[in-house]
Image 1: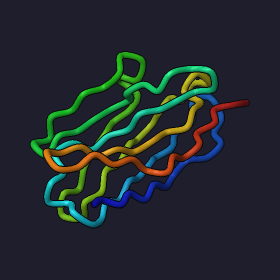
Image 2 (image 1 turned 180 degrees about the vertical axis):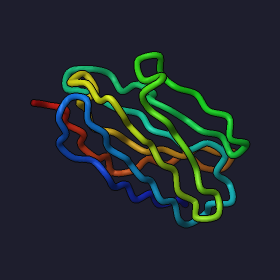
Image 3 (image 1 turned 60 degrees about the vertical axis):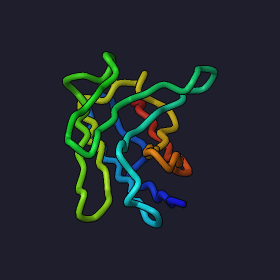
Image 4 (image 1 turned 180 degrees about the horizontal axis):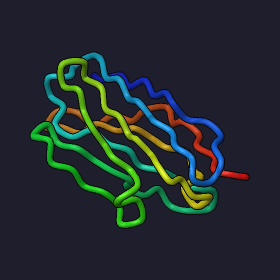
Length: 115
């Protein structure tokens, strides 16, 4: 099993920045991909960004150029740097990990972008 601990959410003004962190523990040897989904009120959960153990990344079109995902494999932690935040980025952000033997989700962290 893998346990995920998320941190870094909060309230920010439009145009501001936040950085989310996701630390994995447990059966981490089986993790390939780490990333984040988000879910806004009344909407379906959507992929925000993902990073493979190789370093390959994937982003939602809506966040390209504003968000950057990175990964510290030595510490089994992923980061999501979110810049130029917009009100439409308001959502609960869920960290996830995926591998041949594991699929796990974090508890979610709230991101609110409002003036």
